[in-house]
Length: 401
Image 1 (cartoon, rainbow, N blue to C red):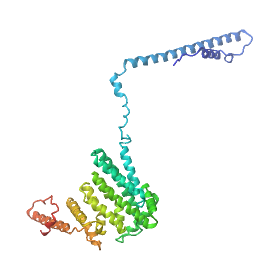
Image 2 (tube, helix red, strand yellow):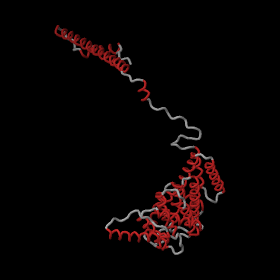
Image 3 (tube, rainbow, N blue to C red):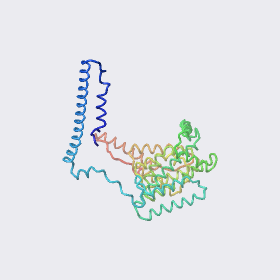
Image 4 (cartoon, helix red, strand yellow):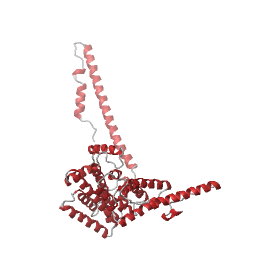
């Protein structure tokens, strides 16, 4: 940038300083002439001072620019530092099959989209079986190719679809539950009815979609109930596919967190209860999912298992569910075992039609072990020693002790 002022600007400044506005009016006489000459000299001196100041200012700017060039040249960092401070290069283009969008893949998004479409199509549609068969084929091919990445893609898509289906099923069951419809006749039924009315004002997109599905399936409660049963059947189908992909833990966690669905299931229709019992029985028989997740799921769905008709599952499945519940209870602490068995006893006694799941041997075994613990505690008090720790639930044949 050139800071040197032009001659035109300096001449204009000089003419401005020497303009007649700065000079007094001439008067006849020597005094006036002398005063006019002094004013001319002062104006000339002022112009010279301004020119000198302007030149000094220009030289100062030039010196500053030269100083910056010298300093930057002498104290410039080595090339290694410049390379270290250089921003990282942009990521390379993703390989074939990857989209580069938050780690997602084309195959994963396509499979997730297909599962979403399957859960939104009415069951009486001709395209439903076609698209569900397509999803079955793609999931099976992911497992047959022997790739861990392909199996992970299938598991992630199934987990997302199962969580979404569970939320929609919970919303559908809440709409079917009328105000005050509680099997125990408590005031909680009235509060649940109020919540179900308020929930319609703040529906999530999944809940609105479930309402649209219910409306498409038919009119009134029958259409909504058919839509809820369809969602329950799809949840069981997704859970079975997740078990094949080794992603049972996500299904157990999502099913154990569906508190609203478990509460609404106690007053649902027998057909919907049977569908929910099949899902719970299948997930309880799976070994995966972790002890905490299986414990939460067992505590959440044990009331429905006691109140619903056991005809929903076969004899072998019923025995497997009882064995799974006994194993879950055996892995709990002593106080948690008491809570779980008390929960079973309350709902088992309140069910007039079902004798399943029968945990009487487990209850008797726990009571026998508790009695033995009491006797050991009494004996240790008499001997002055400490109470033994680490006593767990005894096997079922220990009830004779």
